[in-house]
Each structure stands twice: as C-alpha cells, then as structure tokens.
Amino acid sequence: MAVGMQWIGDHLPEILRYAASHAALAGLPLLVGLAIALPVGWLARRQPRLAGLIVGGSGLLYTIPSLALFILIPLLLGTRILDPLNVYVAMTIYTLALLVRTVVDALGSVPEATRAAATAMGYRGLGRLVAVDLPLAVPVLASGLRVAAVSNVSIVSVSALIGYPQLGSYLTDGYQRDYPLEIGVGIVGCLLLALLFDLAIRGGERALTPWLRVGR
Amino acid sequence: MAVGVPGYRHGMIRFERVTKSYAARPARGAGSAAGDRNAPTVAVDELTLDVPAGQVTVLVGPSGCGKTTTLRMVNRMIEPTSGTITLGGRDTATLDPAELRRGIGYVIQHAGLFPHRTVADNVATVPRLLGWDRRRSRARALELLERVGLDAALADRYPSQLSGGQQQRVGVARALAADPPVLLMDEPFSAVDPVVREQLQDELLGLQADLGKTILFVTHDIDEAIRLGDQVAVLRVGGRLAQVDSPARLLADPADDFVADFVGRDRGYRALGFRDALPIQPTPEPTVPLGADVGQARATATDRWLLVVDEAGRPVGWVEPERLTGAVSRDDLHRGGTVARRDGSLRALLDAALSAPSGRGVLVDEQGAFVGTVTAAQVTAALAAPAVRPGGIPDGGGHAVDR
Image (cartoon, rainbow over all chains, first blue to last red; front, side):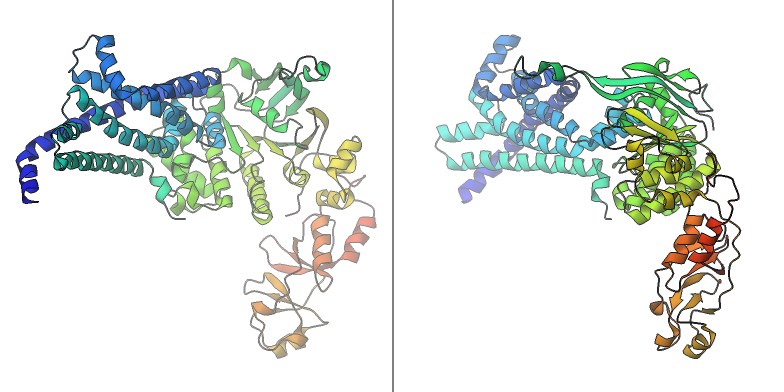
C-alpha cells in the first residue's frame, strides 16, 4: 500500500500531465465535432432525401476500429505517426459519427407548433435556427454530447498503442510491466475524466436551459 | 406605431379564385386503381372571398375543409397553387414572406409560445425582429400584457408557469405587439375549457371594439363562429365555399342542406341572440342583502324564492327563506339562474327567465346592479308583438352578441 502511494506520489506531475493531454485529445474534438455536426445535421433536416444518407453514412464512421484509424490517418494526411494531429482528427471523426444523428434528433425535438409560430412571426431560416430551434434543442444535444464525451475519453486511451502519451499509456505500460497499480491509475484516471466531462456538460446544459427548472 | 410593411395599413384581404392542391402520392403497386390515386388532393378549391378591413371574418367548417390551409396562405406559410391573395390591394406573392409575416399577427392553438423565453420576451418577438431596441420592445410588451388583462408580475415568468388561458392571452398580446392591421387566428381558443374559452372570446370582442383589426379567424365550432364573426364563411370538405353571410343571416337562411346541418339545431333560438332587446319594462322585485337575518328574509319574500344582492346591489343568487337556518350566507344561494343585461339580446333575457328557479329572470344595468326581473311570458309576448324591425332579423352589420 505504502509502496503504491509512493509510486503515485512520485508520478503525480506525470499523471496530471497525462490527464491534461487526455482531456485535450478527448475534449477539443468534441467541440470541433459539434461545430461540424451542427450544419451537417441542419442540412440533413432540410433535405429529407439526403437525410438517410448523411445520418447513416456518418454513423457508419463509428464502426471503423480506432487502432486502424490511428494508423490510417498519417497515411492519408501525410503526418508523422506520432503527430498528435492524427489523434485529434480521428477523435473528431468519432465525435461526428455520434453527433450528426444527435443534431438531427435534437432539431427534430423542437415542437412543430413552436417552429410554425416562429416562422409566422417573421423569422428567416438561420435567424430561427439560432433564436428558437437551437436553444430548444439543447437538452437532446447535451445528452448526445455526454455520450460522445465518454466515448472519446475511452477511445483516446487506445492511442497509447501507437505511443501517444496520455492516461491510456498507464494501461499499456502497466500491462507490459505486470504492475496492476499503474493499470488502476489509468482506469481511475479515465473514469474521473469522463465524470468531469459529464459534469461540465450537465452544468452547461443547466446554464443554457433556465426555463426547464422553474416551478409552476 | 406603423409596421414595417408599407401599403396595407388598411388590411382588407381578398382571395381571388385561390386553389391549393397537393400532388398525388405515387400509387403503390403500379396499375392499381390509377385513376383516383393520381388525381391531386384539393385542399382549397377556387376560393373567392373578401375579408373586409376592420371586421372579424370567421372561416368555419368540418375537418378537411381547408380552413387552416386558407388561413396559412395569407401569410404564405403555404403557397397557393393558383389564384391571388391581396392584402390592402397588394398581391402577397410579390412581398418578401418574412416581411409580410412581421406585419400580420398570428395566434395558434395552444398559443405556440416560445417555451425558452419569458412572457415579456415572447410578446416582444416581432418588435425585436423589426429592430426596436430592448427598452422600447419591453415597454410595448408590458403595455400589451396589461391590455389583454395579465398582471405585469407575469412578465418575467416562462410560459410553462402560466395556465392555458393565460398562455392564450400572451399569444394574443404577442400577435398584437407590432400593431399589425391584420390578425390571423387559427383555432386559438379550442384547447381551453369552455368557461375560459367564453372569457377569451369576450375579451377578444372587447379588444376588437377598441382596435378594429382585420381578423381572419378559423374554428370548427359554429357557436364560436356565430359569436365572434361579423361575417362567417362556411366551408365544406374539399375546400369549397358553401355560404358567406352575417351570423344572423346564416341562422335565418342557410344556403343549403350542408350549411343548415352544420349550423345545427336550435337555429331559431340561437337567432334570438341577434335580436336586440325590445322595450321590456323590468318588474320590481324585493331583495335582501347578504347577511340579512331569517326574519327579515321571510318578511321580505313574496313567494318561495327571494333574490339576494351584495353590498353593491349586484344580484348574487336566490334563496328559499323557509329553509334558512340563520343569516343569509353565500352557502344558501341557488346559483342556477343566469343574469342578463336589461339591454341584452332576447336570447339572454329568455335564458335568464328560463334558468331562474323563481321563473323571474334577473336583469342588471351596465354596472351589474340589479334593476328588476322579466318572465319568459313577457319575452315571448314581446316576440309575438309586431317586431321593431320588419323581418325581425337585423341585416348584417353590428350585432349584439349575448354576453
């Protein structure tokens, strides 16, 4: 036990560094993915004929094995194998795969009567999206984001196999050295990080939807 | 207070041979009953109708008669297949849809309020879209809330915190916010209970008396149509106009079996609602105030029933003095009787008489103070007497709706 605490104490700066790296690798793609998924999902809703293709096609991306994608991307982008950009791009693709459907569902969750009222008041397409549709879509968007965040935290750890340092490195390293404590640190770290993301998204959702928490 | 759309301050709406049809769905299984399925579905068929400025025109008909489609073609939520719609003389097809809509108030069922915006922000929607600053928009919103009878304290609540009736009032306030000359109302009161509905109808008539908007109102409820309309257009399934007339004429002279059937039974009785009061002298009636003791009540009564008034002289109900066990309290009141204004319609007078347990209908003045009673016999005698206006039915124009 004491040895274990000793190991954690010695490695604390590194653990925090890995955690920060893990958070960036999982979190930034979440934001970029959302920024791309919003217009794509909006387009899918406006073009019902394309909707099946867009939603189905983007969903399919999620089935690509992550290890394969980590190795494939340098070949496609011409980046070095250890370039963090590879991980960012791969994680953005996974985020997109989950969020396009979420955006379509979220925009679909806005009541038809509310949309019709907004149009009848004289909102134009984009103005209505920003002023009425998006605010009302926040709850569904947030629940999709939470799934994507947890999924990202988990997939990022796989990038340890190609040698990019983050909390997943404790899993590979601990396994190779047969050191369960290190594996435990990796697992608990990932769990805590996923929890943190979840709390942050919930907090954001609460701040953006004050009307949902009023008593009658 | 003019709206950003020039040219139709006086918002007469004119439909000229307007048709809306939807392309037929491709028939499943080629060759099966092709003839019928390939015909387009006609929602509105060659509609020609004038909606006079400053009046309430009600579109009424069974479901599938195209009334909502007709309404939505005015603000181009739906585009006509053929024909033209003009607003104050301007062809709406030539106007920018969003600009056009900002100049037309729109009220829908369940109010269609924005759940994420406060009541005041909901009402300020169109002013904000027209570029008014925040302060002016809010001031206007508060003014309108007061106008539709809502407490200013509700301004910063969210729609989910209001009752159905309150939400509907906010919907009306929102439609009026930029003072548009035209209001479109799509079954606005059908989702609230009958008591609130009647209240909202009265308030709308009150507002309209002040504002004189051009209102196009859609309902499936013929009673609502008759109550609210200066003019009622009855549509039949397939979007064909069956009859356009004043409510009184619609009741007195339905154009065909469909209209007669749709207008329903009791047409003669309901038509009394449009017959202004004949000179009937109210009969004096002894009354006691609330709180009078048993002795006073029994001494005052002339028969089994005795009318009770409040401190302002307004009738509150009937009591049976013989059954009293103490001072007259609200618990003793029989509340079955309706109350009619002395200058109310014959229908209101007759209803008051028929509903009173004593058989004596209670009449009040403009302030609601008791003035006397009337019996059903007096009303029917007045009906049988030579009518004030030949024919008995006022032709079109202003009418007294029984309140």
